[in-house]
Image (cartoon, rainbow, N blue to C red):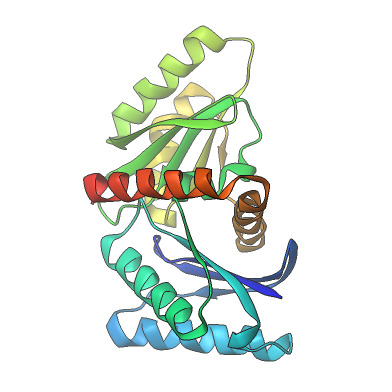
Length: 225
């Protein structure tokens, strides 16, 4: 049985197809507007299914990133995901973007920067394996936040995970570089593997915990957007 993961909250979008915990393939969707992006999503999904000999009826679950990120992209992703599950009678699970890519964090503490489509970024504070706080960051605020993380944790390394377009990342390089903090910019395959890893976590938790977290995420999304 197949699983589909969908992240359209950033500048580019990502479709991931897996057989349970095994990554089969992924498709990166370039920035586009309106109907063009919808068509690109559907073409990407058709292409993945065709390559791996699957069909929509083989889907056992759909996982969608529900924010934080670009408002239009999130709406599109959620609409597509809901359409898929209604048409295939498949369970739908929502994941927060900063949590979905937590497998890419290689240090105990740090900052995850998520695209907002504006001059500022969503920042997730990473502490001991958990994203413990979310804020809307100006460049200098990111520097101050990292300083506060480093002060009580001088023995632990700190890093920044950037899920941002290239121009936005360059701006943050200038501001964060003076702290000597490494900034990680994962490639598409690394993002696909992390997204699947986050989806597999749903197998390890009671259903009521997942439902409770989805409710919290829905409240967060309304507040953030």
